[in-house]
Length: 119
Length: 257
Ligand SMILES: [Zn+2]
Ligand SMILES: [Zn+2]
Image (tube, rainbow over all chains, first blue to last red; front, side):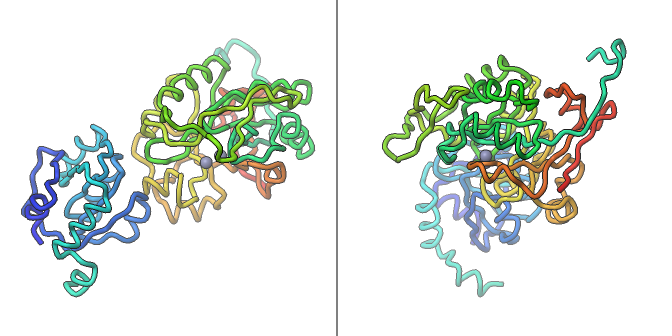
């Protein structure tokens, strides 16, 4: 699924000046513990989290994630946004609770089984 | 500071535990009183303690008083939970700097959280274990401050920040943030893992001094298999510890069983 489509469906708020909506999202990973994301997230995943710390950008870059969405209205550090612009990482925020965001993504067709088959 | 002008002090090995809770921490047993902690530390041959309650320093002075004449030095400390739910042990060179930091922490604790009737007890006590008051605010909650903000504030007060229990999956710098953020002014990492294992699993930890502390919430926890030892001046203070962590002026640190 195209990232631009997801941004529209979920009315995500873009935090960066950098715009890389043409990316595809092939899976979803939800976690706040970055060590879990390091171990489990896959390339082109959309990462849904409450974590606004700058380390999310380094990790998104390392794992080549499609984007990071900070949900639940959680704050994002200025430094995180600066780094995301620098490293060209798609970074979004939403005031919706992450359960709601995950539910909407599921309805969009990003079900675990659906992307398991795409692999 | 003016080491060049005065004769070099005699250095010796001292046994330390830089992460100990008292009855002011809701999760600590009621036997974690100043007298009991100091008596137990004395039995174990511990020379240096840091009292590190969650978001409070109110029992440190009582522990220092209880330690008076025992040869045990008690440092001002506090365990902080950052916005990212990372635990940091923060140590201060003086009561004044600890008080300044506690005031900052007060401003950044969630204001509405009261411990209420959850059965949690947070007691401020005297050196002779008398209860002065019960803390009503729920002290263990995330501050509205990032790890960077906390470490920088501590450094600004000439204190030291130590990443607490880094090998735990939660409430730790490595568990929550995956790796040590570059340029974070963190002086050491507290771990129960062997250095080689930690470095293999978390390459970002290479180069940081490692400490073994008890994070004791009850008296038996003060008795550990391994301890941190510092080779420092007998009249130990935080600047001696700081030098040991940096390996300066002949000071050093090691973990031994
Ligand atoms: Zn802790
Ligand atoms: Zn602790």
